[in-house]
Amino acid sequence: TNPLEVVKLKLQTTRDDNYSLSDVWEEVGGVLGMYKGVLSCLARDVTFSAILFPGYAHLKVVLPMVLAEHGVMAEVDPIVTSLLAGSIAAAPAAFVGTPFDVVKTRLQQAREKKDECLLDISRSTMIPNNNNPSTIAEAVCDDEEDSLSEILQQIKEEGAWFSGWTERCMRSCLQFGVTLSLFEMLNVKAAEIGML
Image (cartoon, rainbow, N blue to C red):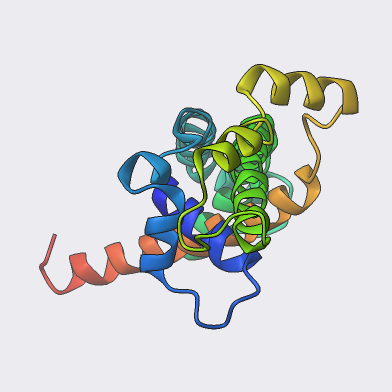
């Protein structure tokens, strides 16, 4: 998902209405730029999935028994079970993955700062060719991009490892509750018509 994250971040933070995917491609530096922060993105997604899917599978079995035992529902619809199981399993998965998401976002924002620096310098009258900033501008702006160790230190000093966790958990609960219940519903329908 990392290239999609890069494109999303660039498109959401630009002020230009004519900004396109080719502009993003050129600005980030092609394939390698699209994968900036890929390790933290991978760590976030693997951690999230390693918690979500086993939790979901377990809750799908346990929830009907718990609900019936406590007299909430005598018989629970499988779609409702999937909705509840997906929502409940997504919360801890999102919470545990939040530090990786914070690191990924900070890495991508560091690139944004460097890109803005280059743009500002190329617009200035000090550099004659506005389309191609000089190597001096590149050297000045390289200082703008924080290294991973600097970003980790900043997050530690700010105590920001879990910043945005409530919003991330709420979004994930809704998203995976609905997504997994729709998956189960489509599975049932596919089985009914002989596709499975």
